[in-house]
Length: 270
Image (cartoon, rainbow, N blue to C red; front, side):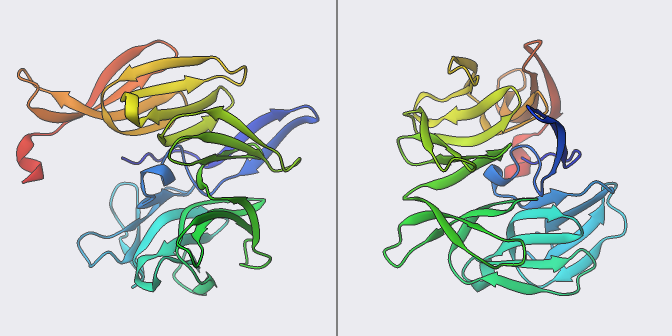
């Protein structure tokens, strides 16, 4: 499940209000990043109808345009560039202009969980022992630097990189270079904003929120394919009179109200 809203995040810091440009939206990257939006009404996506090639289109589906034969995932869009991991080149990282020109390989390797910001690219890459390591790299592909060993990128917000393993969720402060524990759980679908950290605790089958004070709250039990953005949690759950087919729901985290966004019959999965 993917969401499309503005990519510019306004943050309040001790030195005043600043603006940070992000190439991702909400929890899209944690959901595989098969689509990414810009601030100008365009969506960049992997076409299921054309052999998983990279396309762009307007949000209303018009002006569909082929960009590359690459098979993209973890798609980010920032300042006129589209960044992605290329399945057809063993998940090496690439970028291409939004008009399909100036395609470049940025780094060779098995790279996943790509988060692109003004401050550079954050991603994880497997080493020769097939162990996952977290790196930072400049937007032009220069100066790759190992940040955190034996963990995966889970999310990014306001100078903090959230990292996970099979039994732990941590926060890596980019300014101080320190790594601190958030919880000792197996997590997925992690997202962070000014209100705290949101994640699915896999073994508990609960979607949780932890404030920056460290207090945890369970927002939802059950569900699947979670994507949190701007105070709204979107997820799949069973619907219908007999709860026999999937629906997409939206939970307003503040008001605790839930509404159905879309109902899908079971035939759509045949």
